[in-house]
Length: 306
Image (cartoon, rainbow, N blue to C red):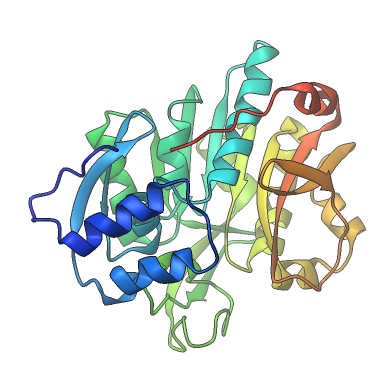
C-alpha cells in the first residue's frame, strides 16, 4: 500500500483505518468503523498526497471525496470503470476522446480521466472547489481546462445552497436538497445555458460527458440538448429523484438526448435497461449512442482497482 506523503504525522488510528479501507475485507459496518476511527466531519484540516492510479492526488481529510481516496483508494470506482470503458470504446473506433465533466467538484473524476482522454474540461460554479481541482491538475502537469460557471437551460443568476458537512459535493441549486446537510441560506452564482457556453469556448464536441449536479439534472440536460443531438456523446449521469420529477417522463428525458440513445442504469459492472420512475433517491445512468452499443457491450469489463 502506498504511504501518504504529508507534512503531518499520521495518527495510528488513521493508519489502521486506511489499512482496513484498502483491504479486501468487506463486511457490514466497515464504513461505520472507519468513521469511528476518523470521521470526515470531525477532521478540521489534514492535507495529504497519495498515489492515485499512477497520479499524484493531493487532498484533505476534511473533504469527503478526498477522505474516500485516502481510506478506500478512490471515490465511486463503479463510475470510473464506466468512464474508462466509454473512452476505450471510442479509442477502439480510432476516435480521439474529449471528456467534459459537469459538476467537477474537487477534480476526482477529471484527474482520473486525464489518463484516458486526449482533452479534458471541467465545469463547476464553486470557485473554492474548482481551485482544489486545479491543484490536482497542476501537480500532475495534467492537460485540462477548468471553467468557473454553472450550466443550466438559460442564462441567469441562481441561488446556490452549500453543504454544511465534509461532503461538499452535495451543495445544490435546489432549496432543501439535503435537509440538515445543506444550508438554508444560499448565495447567488452565475448560470449559463449549456450549449451556448460550450459553443463559445469551442468544447461542444466532447464525446464523453459526466453530469453530477445534485438535483439540477433537468435544467442541465435541457441546456445541453443541442450539443447532445449534434455530437452524440457517451453520457454518465447521476439522476436524482428531483431531476426525474422535473423532467416528468421517459419521453421528456429522451427529448433532451439524441435519437437512438441506449439508456442503462448500473450498479457495479452490471448494466440493465433504465426504467424511468420517481421512487429512487438517485440512480447512475450510462447513456450510449446506438452505433456504439454493441461494441460497448462486447468489451471486457475493465475492473479498475485503486
